[in-house]
Length: 91
Image (cartoon, rainbow, N blue to C red; front, side):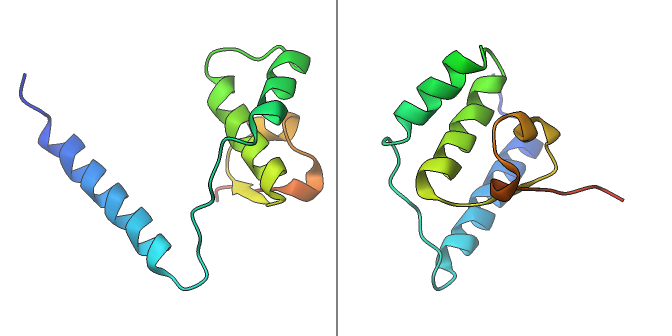
């Protein structure tokens, strides 16, 4: 099977973008794994499954690290407190 060139270009641009973000002074890539207890609790309390699990992992990471999430994805309102979330609106 031949890889789709558009997918390869999109992947390389995405990797380059993340690389550029990580090159900015003060930007850190945190070690993760300790957020498991929070993720487990979110999944069990909110009865999450399927596509909600990656969102829950991001929410658990935000909570564990004491960070703030900025997103267009309104599904995070059920996973994070208001002070932990900025919900963007496309115009």
